[in-house]
Image (cartoon, helix red, strand yellow):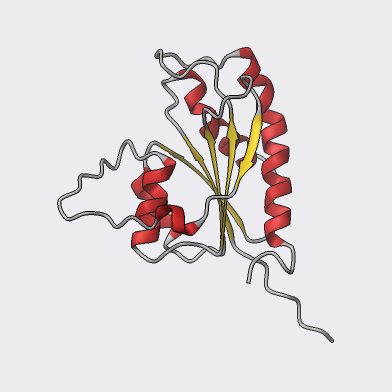
Length: 170
């Protein structure tokens, strides 16, 4: 009898401010994922704007991290992207006295904190959606971003499957 290969532990974290329209995209996708049967080894959290909580969660030792967020990349609103940030991009040390606001940590700051504390997972991906409106307060998504929620859920699950493939994460 062959022992089963351990399943890579993957954290999916939705980011964004639910009160700034399309910026709440990551949290909505995270909550949609929490309503589904997920593969073994997958944890989902709606981190919202609490990057400090996310950084602490990452330090639990996940092999992979998938961040879900709204991100202006220059495409049409609702366009989905999968990006792979490199660890070296976040090598800048946190400076003594540098202020980190635990309630407004963008993905770059979260990843800098994770990198600085030695908790960088073997694989990191960002599933992002091009927003239409993030500057005005409100809780309603633009039509293009609302239409991107279900495709984003599918894209996150596809990304997780790739990360859990035998050769993907050491």
